[in-house]
Length: 457
Image (tube, rainbow, N blue to C red):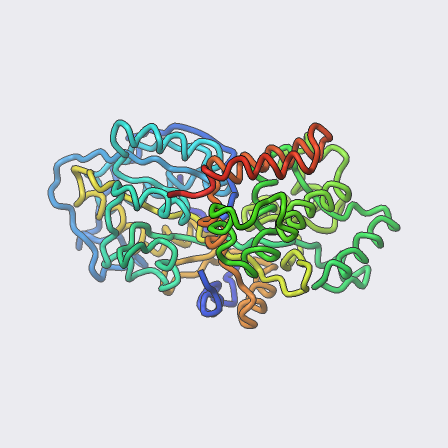
């Protein structure tokens, strides 16, 4: 795959100021594309005369191949909706600097298939490299199956990239990029209708009421994807539950609270009803791409989502003018949600540690590759001195929330209540409740019944 860099350079550095106000994140976004890739056809790249990659590739501390012997590394990649295709970019960059190394890719949907695959590999032996999310480190590092990431590569990342992948002083994941989550809104539509960005539920309801009066769908949604229901539910939980009660999950497991008894948690679940009542009638048969297209063409004013929607927005209309704000909570102090996304983990039992380190070297030192991946996925950089160059109309909003210290790291919620086996299953009951197949009380009781699967440990 040839490298494609956007032509318009982003004026503001995406995360330099942003992460100064961040706490600690990882959400329930899941990829929808699944493939298995074992392709050696692009491995014949050559190095430059000095053995490095060329113009912008960093060289400080870069590893050299331990030998010229061919090495094949196995990679399990749990992909989000934005990620399918980056494996080709990585292959190309790796072939240029380390032509003796071949990556044998197994690409799966992170939300549905990554955890089951990991459970299978725990029985037979992990792949050399695993690509998941920051929250996966909390699941697997305590089992002793992940290797520490060498500081040579960690030091090329932002300090905030280590926060949620470090356990007992040891870092087991390399966070590569980040997403933001909240309510995307059509800036032009808001301006035309004199709508102010809402901070409270009352503010939001006024916009919903005006939308209905003008035959505008308030929210675009694709509830056919239960991963989307799970994701937005965690957004709701972050601002109504975890930002108020950071250890809610521990209290839940200790029997001090429950989904059925917690007013805060019931409120978070009920926001799904608000979306359902104010979205497309066919939301349970609308796919994400169609949903995002309706948002871009003005059929809906807002969408509770994350940065993965930007890819679709700009593919449909590169001039689409959109912003982002936090979904308003009950107390009017919601924060924009930040999520470390692509996170590289390595096996403690790999027989090819030098080659694995060479892959980490390429990922953290090749600036051309990093910018290519960030532009393609429409995500934020977690590497030092590297920023994407795609035009992001919502960046102005992100910078504002960051400068005000109004950014919340969703890893807090995802580590308290894990995705695999818990959030994803809860989302299925939310879907059943919204479609009238079970009661709200039954959906809450079902979540309570999964207490034992709510923690990674």
